[in-house]
Amino acid sequence: MLQQQIQRKQKNFALQRGLYVLRYETAADPAQPPVVTVVCEPGRNEVVMHPEQSRATMSAPGQALVIRANESGGVQVEIASTGHASTLDVTLKFEPLRRDTGGPAGLVLFPQSGASRDIANGFQVLAHVARLGDVTVGPDQWLGGPSAPSWIEGFSVNWPGKPANVSLRYAATIAGQPPGAARLVEAGEFAGTRGRARPILGLMAELSGAGARNFQLTMEGLFLGAPTRRPSGQTITLTGPTGREPLVGLRIGVASNQQVTQPTVSSAHPPAGGAPAAAEPRRVRVFRA
Image (cartoon, rainbow, N blue to C red):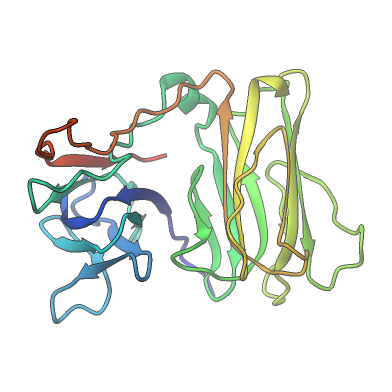
């Protein structure tokens, strides 16, 4: 049976204590708009939904969700494709519902700079995810992850824009595999298994070659029952605390060492001795990888 490949991208935002509305304003593909899902930190914040809603999702522009932040904490916004949508480009807008509410930090997500975009052009990670089959995402996008944890059984990385003097290799350690049996494969090859209910317990990736010093890999792994880890560099190894925890979330990216850090919007702070500054509505623009 053919499995539909789902495209996803996520971004985490920090909210100060307060009340916010998140509006779905536009979608680049109005015929098949992506679905926007909000995942909160239990106890810290919550989504106030319409009585007829059972999930914190928005399926088309014009819809909105109200977020109540009981404490300062993070929320995750996920954009997921529907049908055969060709783009995940959407425009969202956070609005504080009280003028004395400080705006959330890191609201503005810009596209990568021209050089970095060329480097990552076409960069994709395919993984075989339990109950979903093969799922493909772009750079720094979750497979599984905090909002949808699920066993990851194997993966491959495709990097068409990779310079000729750079080599990318990776390996996966699989449940039930003899020690030392993990084999390094080249970019484009599949590491792991499919449909055997044998999750990844650990993985490694490395950049080598004359041009490797100009780049770094970023990888974030979520193992069952453990906090996420996000190492970066030319060589990366990821396992859970004991090495026996299954991998239930993974995202991989690549960047130039000269890449400029993307700008973010800082939280609003009241001026010394004065009233809090009025927070203005701010926009989140999510661009296609």
